[in-house]
Image 1: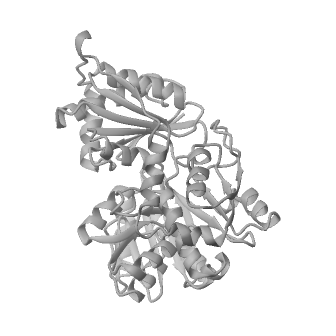
Image 2: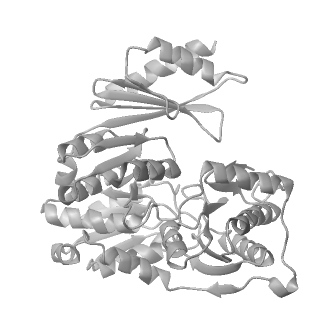
Length: 460
């Protein structure tokens, strides 16, 4: 059983003792803390909620709705939805905030409360800390019977979200339609099965095969859209002679593609391709987190913009994007953020822009992928011995590599000519993650191995 309280929300496995897993008592407690925090911000009583397709979704939703109503807050329930759709709805409804019931790419036994502010953006670290304090002290005051909140169900946001994508200036529906794409979608038994086929149809893509299309939360494979989990999609694309495969995670904020030969386009390259398309018509800056590929930097400089790295985490990427006025940004895990639509990772606008780019390129997907610089990221982690002083280890590594460019905004990033390595501790387990990137796969692995060797030496 696990319960993780972090700035991006409250995550846990369903069941178990209160405080050890995401039990009904924990759901109520943290929802009450969030609702209380909202009432301290403003008199606005409206909260938007939505959920992914998880088995526990309906149960968790009922607890959340009743708790918010009990605080005197009015709930607008989108029910089966996506993370970006709820973010958009918060703004369109002029709500005080929103909650998405999703544990993102975690397996089926997990669920979570992802918490939004009145802008439809994830709450900040500072706000998260305030909220956890309210939960810990149980500083909730529930409404008396004449002031209980209301409940409304609203199923109009699927269409509203699709309309936003269709009306986005750089989404070229006639060009997409003309290419007559044949697409296979891996919907991983969640709400992507509802949202993505509807979007593709609206974009003029008529030939769509959906794998794992039953929204039952019984994920047919590990739901994180990584190559090892997408073999069924890869095989189906190949077998059916499709033009491409699309994969999303359970809450539809991450997006990756499979080429016509069944090979991976690479989740790191979702953002690279979309940025390339946007930067061709809109000069400007880009942002991705420190663990993302430098192919984005290459593409940005080539198009006359400036690239800025940010600490890992969507809320940090968004903050940096606002700071440098980025025209596009996101994360290397297939998260696309299009700021003039909304500041959140959104697979729907990602698909609209990506297919427009592919249509304009007149290429097949593999050829498009081959037009970008090739980088390989080696992703590793090292378990920490009990009582190890991570700061001390990082200081020693900084000392050893003091002649290289170092970035200490988020853990430690060391740059070598065309390569880099990024070390950061996990918020959720006693490990250091080590990501290394190079234009050569073996080099990337070797850099990571070398740093892991350093860590082991400095640990003892």
